Length: 187
Ligand SMILES: [Zn+2]
Image (cartoon, rainbow, N blue to C red; front, side, top):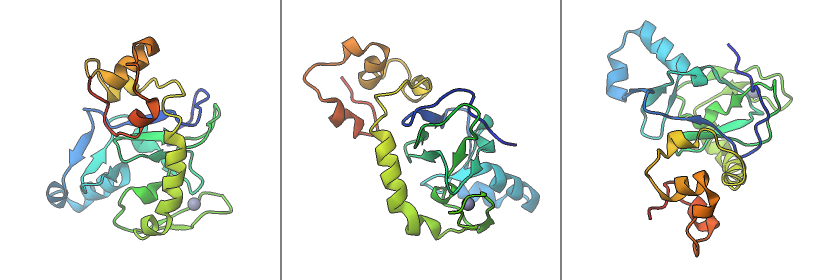
């Protein structure tokens, strides 16, 4: 299964949010599944920074890896477009960020394809990935964010208030200092 953009998504757009319906499988729980189930879980999950396998209940589990990907995991429970994505373009991800436990063959049809995804990729490439993420995150407040209400439900104040009405943004507080935080500022 392949997942395509249906509209233009500018760089900086949040493309995936880990919401309350995601299935979370802790390492101890994973060990108790049968080998057949483990294979299915491995195929459709990603592993977060705590080693928990997350199986998305929605289409997110069908996003393919590409060595020239257009979205990336920020580590804050959401993914972001690292460049402009055109309508009809396949949404792709960098699996090397996902704490993978075993090697995978790759066929991205790009000249820069690494051919093989391995657990050591993160150490090798994270500086470049971080640069791409930082560049995309700097646009977080500059583009429309339809998924933002899922990250910051109404009532968390601060950043969410700014999004619903930019006039509500508290004066005397720079936008730059707020975007550098992983949680919304409290009022
Ligand atoms: Zn590749």
